[in-house]
Length: 95
Image (tube, rainbow, N blue to C red; front, side, top):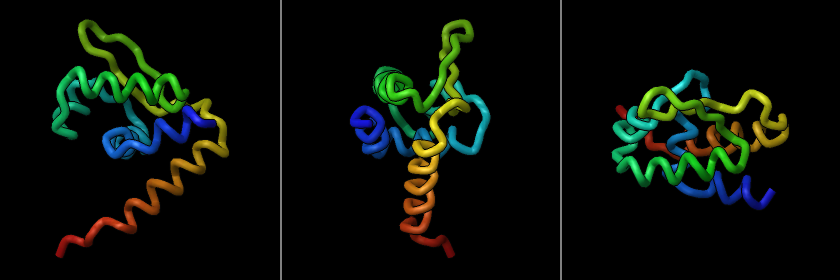
């Protein structure tokens, strides 16, 4: 549980999860561009999420693609859902 909580405690990892959580598969290059992160930094963050079992990866030529782990325990997925919902409510509304 400690690895899981540590994995979702970082703002960059939460931002990556916000992209991955609704579904779909994204290469690290897409995550880098959307989050304005270097390749090495993004790869390190994704490694933490993978080690915690939150995301899965697959190699595609020179890139690695990530997606939400469909087998994540429901209670852990519920925690991420709650964090995403709370984060969304805290974001300022754009007029």
